[in-house]
Every structure is written in C-alpha cells, then in structure tokens.
Amino acid sequence: MAPPYTSPYVLSSLLLLLSIPAVVLLAPRLLLPRTLPAIPDADESDDLALFRRAVLLSSSGSGAGGAGGFVVRGRPQPKVAFLFLTNSDLVFAPLWEKFFAGHHGLLNLYVHADPSAVLASPPTPSFRGRFISGGKATARASATLISAARRLLATALLDDPANHFFALLSQSCVPLHPFPTLYRTLLSDNNNAGAGHRRRHRSFIEILDSEPTLHDRYYARGDNVMLPEVPFDAFRVGSQFFVLARRHAVMVVRDRRLWNKFKVPCLVKEKDSCYPEEHYFPTLLDMQDPDGCTKYTLTRVNWTDAVDGHPHTYQPEEVSGELIGELRKSNGTYSHMFARKFAPECLGPLMEIADSVILRD
Ligand SMILES: *[C@@H]1O[C@H](CO)[C@@H](O)[C@H](O)[C@H]1NC(C)=O
Ligand SMILES: *[C@@H]1O[C@H](CO)[C@@H](O)[C@H](O)[C@H]1NC(C)=O
Image (cartoon, rainbow, N blue to C red):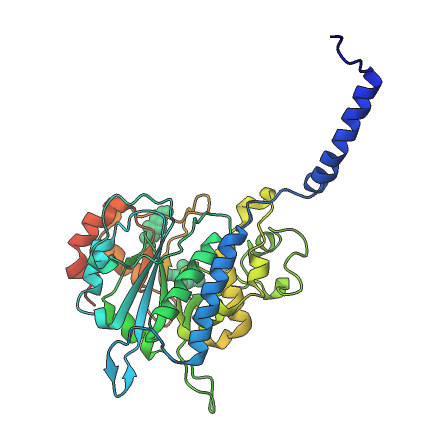
C-alpha cells in the first residue's frame, strides 16, 4: 500500500496549527516572572477549617471539649503552651524534660513535625502523643513556616482553654532559666496603658521597623503585590520565635487579609530576600495591637557572622556556664528565656550544666 501523500506544506501548517494552543497556554508563564512554589490549595483548605474552629471556640469563650486543668477559685490556672516546630529529632528533649519536670499542671506541649522528617529516636515522655495531626512539609523561602506556626497556635487554642501563652520554639532552641522564672515573667507582665485601660498581658515578639533589609524583603514578591493591605510603612521584621498572649494567638489564626498577601510566593530571583515568617507575625501584631506587644523577643539568637540567613550555631566546646549567663542578658525589661541555635552535639555539655546553671537562677 502506498503511503498517504502529505505535502511539506500541509505538514508545516499542521505543525503551526498544533503549536497555537501551546503558545496560548504557555505565553502567560513565559511572560510572568518565575516564582517559588506556592502553598497547595488542599493544604490551605485543611488549615482554614482548623482555624475557623479555633476562632469559633475562642470567641464563644467556652472550653467545649478542652482539657480543664487546675481549677483555682473556679478559674483554670493559666498554662503555657510550648509549640515546637521541627523537621528533625527533638535532640534537646532530655533537657526540656528536666525543664518541664514538676510543672506539667501549668503547661502543654505541641509538636509540628514535617511529615518527611525521619525521627531516629522515639519521643521522650512529655513529647509522646503531642505531635499534632495535619502537619505539612515546611521549607525555607516559603510561607509554609507561617502555616505551621498557625497550625500549632490553632491546635493549642482548641485543645485547652487554659492555654494563656504560646511559646514558639524549634528543635535547636534550649531553655535559659527554670520554668517558674518563665511563668512568673509572662504572668507578671502587664501593659499599663494609662488609667481606664484594662491591664492585659503582652506578647513577647520582636517588632523592628528600620532594618536595612526591609526594602528588598518587601518587594520579594514583586512590585505592589502587598498593596493595599500592607503598605511599606507598615511592614515590620522580627524574630520568627515568640511568645504570644492568647488574644494575639486568636488574632493570628483569625487573619485572612494579611495572610493572602504573605502567602504569595516570592520571585525566584528574590529568593535571598524571602523570609515571610520573619515579617508576617510582627507586621500583623503591630498593625492590630502595637501596645500589646513588648517589641522584643525572649529568645536570644546570635547573628554575628551569620551565613546564608543562618545565625551562629553553638558547638559543644562553646557551651559553659559563662555562655548561659551571657545569653540571658537582654536589653529588654526581662532576661532572655530561650536561646538558639545549638548543634545537636551540645546535648551532653548542656545536660552537664542543666541542674547547676540552666535550671537555677
Ligand atoms: C556570637 O557568635 C560569634 C561567632 O559567630 C562568637 O565569636 C561570639 O562569641 C558569640 N557571642 C556570644 C554572646 O555567644
Ligand atoms: C543591646 O544593645 C546594644 C546597643 O544597641 C547592642 O550592641 C547589643 O548587641 C544588644 N544586646 C543584645 C543582647 O541584644
């Protein structure tokens, strides 16, 4: 059978015809600047359902389904919720166990682990069963770290109405004082915003407005992307690790307006200016309740000689009583309560000075 005759002309017009849809489909992608990966829609809708429940429960003022806790004169004793964000083993768990020991009536633990994290050792008793469900992958230079922190806040709000303070920590954080010192500090701080104002607990979150990196970081998603919700003048930066008062935890979980801006992926070419988790929380709280925040953090971090956005990581030979004393010093009203980052190998030396230095004032 003779092959069907096809003229070169027909072939080329056919190719041209076929390529039209491809051009139509691809052109917008080719023209738009390339961005880093966005948050998957499915993750977004899971979160939204969780956040709605947390806000609903918190605004109803009831603790339906929550664990009660200590009751003193009809009111539950306030608790501190420790929120651990991790993508590896919680290597300092033995130190945290010492820190928590004897105070379990005044605290709760929650862990958000990246599902891809391979945990080499089983959780120690306080962390057992405290890994929250619905943990999602986290990555640098994306809003996934914000989502993970909001998931932890929402879960802790729902879990126990006695959770009064919410301390976000990572696997490389360590305590610098005994638990009662932290507890006393958080509970005794009130803002005295003049007569007629109700005394309220403050959140301990760093809020800075004149860092040299602000400009590049504001434009990391492109020109005008943040407008009109977040004008440059309102854009703030601060440590990713904070302690929030309960009303601020609700505020963060309720927010959709700013989240819709901060979740926009950064442009690929702006990857080095993409740290949304250092901006979202300080910007939101500074817009909604500036007087309710200390504007400094209780978590010490050493940015001297920082490399590629990573602060100094303490090594075992650096761990000493003097170092703990140095890290506790703060320019704020209160001493630092936590510090990061410590290399996993520091566990041994830290345990050696736990009773004599870290957990003693
Ligand atoms: C901070 O890190 C630098 C090295 O990057 C180190 O020389 C310095 O001693 C550290 N400061 C404190 C207070 O640990
Ligand atoms: C305290 O403030 C001084 C002066 O601004 C600064 O050099 C120092 O690093 C600050 N210390 C801490 C622990 O933040």
